[in-house]
Image (cartoon, rainbow, N blue to C red; front, side, top):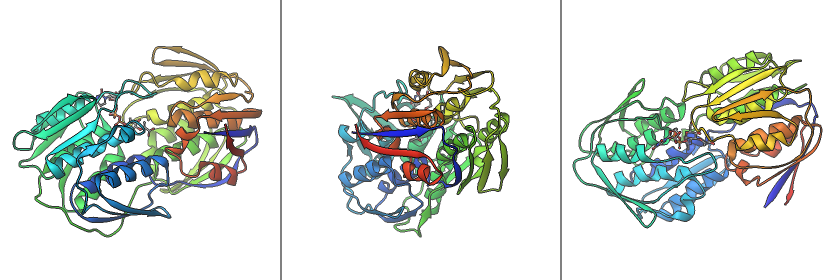
Length: 418
Ligand code: EPU
């Protein structure tokens, strides 16, 4: 295993270009299993989760090439309907193959994804949704086995908004027998990117705010011109908070400003100076970081996937801040690690109370999940002296070439064996 060693407290300046979106690429790649065809994509982030999804598709029988952020997939020979435990356990987003396989084969067998470091993470909404549109599921030896039990289509209202739940229901109903209406759907731009891609293949999916109507089609296009994945708003947000740390000044490009409204609002509230276009933003760190009160909530509100990174900024705030985590209430494992830097954070259930301090000092920290790792990297970059971050494979799941991007703006960062 590898660790990252950071010598922090060095001002970071320069330009960062944001890669394609992980959470958009994953469902879109999974959707290539829907129908036998040949598909091409650009702006695909070269990260471990994408490689895991491509491997899963290969195990199912697809063939792919992945080079220079371009993916070509042929799903003509895809002939298996089972997502094995070994892959699902490394990446929860493997559940996205469930809906696609149900459409392709009318049945699918998926290893039960179980919990992860950010909480219990049930799939009851996926299950109930599938049931409402005509699929039955049994649980056997750790596997979820679903099959079409009646005409596919109907309506379902999500009790809790679920991003991959919404995507799975779209995938499972796209070529059904009758119309499907989904209510209280997730509004995340990644769901819209999936809809846009599927409609470019000839699907008929309409969104009216939180309502999504899927009129089934009998086939999809076998080939499309290359499809470009949207920019990763969470990677963008991570670098935007990095820019807010003392003495930093970054220009972050290849972003979609419209998907970052709540995040930009917090950047302004922190006291940072910003200059923006529709696809880039220049952020100059404030001389004093202002404290904040923030709650995480589904899009368009402040994302849970940026909670740890914002916390890494607020630990240096001038005063007391609060972050309430409403999406994954247990997503605070990074707090114990940030405390090692000297951060003063008190936890009360899903509320983190942060008392800002003037400076922090490097320490050895353990990464627990993808976004927590990003929070620890931000902490280490602003802490005086040396930090070591272990289990860094979590970071590689979702940030393309992060060491190189950080080195290019002046960070003293290297990777060695643990
Ligand atoms: N939930 C249920 N039942 C379900 C599904 C969800 O109770 O059947 C609950 C979850 O436990 C959670 C809430 O609903 O409390 C929202 O979860 P959601 O299903 O929306 O999360 P997800 O689809 O599993 C996606 C992203 C996550 C991101 C969340 C929230 C992908 C591949 N993953 O997960 O991204 O945190 O939405 O925005 O799109 C990450 O990129 O690091 C990451 C974890």
